[in-house]
Amino acid sequence: MNHADIETLAKNWVVDAASKPADARVQQVVVRLLGDLCKAIEDLDISPSEFWSGVSYMSAAGAANELGLLAAGLGLERFLDIRADEAEAKAGLEGGTPRTIEGPLYVAGAPESTGFARLDDGSESEQAEVLFMQGTVFDGDGQPLAGAKVEVWHANLMGNYSFFDRTQSDFNLRRSIVTDKNGRYAFRSILPKGYGCPPNGTTQQLLDKLGRHGQRPAHIHFFVSAPGHRKLTTQINIDGDEYLWDDFAFASREGLVPPVTRIDDPAQLDAKRVSAPFASIDFDFRLYRDTAAAPSPLVERPRAAA
Image (cartoon, rainbow, N blue to C red):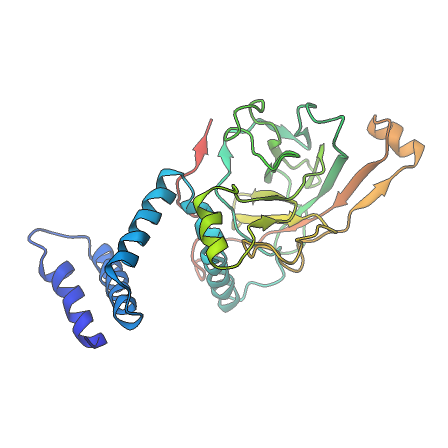
């Protein structure tokens, strides 16, 4: 069959077959995706066995709750960011903190504080390096933003996230910090480690077929928001990680790899109330003002809440 014949079939199956009012946007998307899939079946001579193997794989990925991970691993989540960057550039927005993928492991409702928070519950203190991270949230004019919200979350030393890993305490390594009157935020945590996809999971199964690893560099996630400004979804990577520029989720970006400073000065240790050298990261966030010239940065997707 040629592509025109396939497009006609897809329209017949979706639009012409409708016998009651339908959602025009859903119809439009399904016709396109169905048609493109049928074209792939034709062009690549995909066999029925291969087709049903694919259906079984997607069913298993859904049952394992790995479709969000798969979207990141195939670059789809990064592609959405590329399109959002292009839309903002066309609207004349430039100079803000780069966005990058959210990932599937955010949990709403983390405890909120002003200016400072401690993220970790102390359970890995014997094995972990203490991290202090701090900075300022700026508006589009370069002025500090008091009252901005910095939501932060990251994995423990095993590469696991609280809530999804029930062995961790509630909201371990998750907090919401409201910037102080000077637009400042700060937190104490542990320096996270990199991690990989579940080795026996569906995402790694496909990555193995593609000859790819499923590793992520150590990173820390952020939502940064303030009234009258565009919400920022981003993450920083920990400099020096083996997979810093080889992230299976394609989320590493210039401008999101701040230097890590090791502090061993006794006066600074005393000031932080720690007894051993610690890691320090300075990182400022720069938000764009709200504008109707670019699509909304708010993304509706299923998210956990506790």
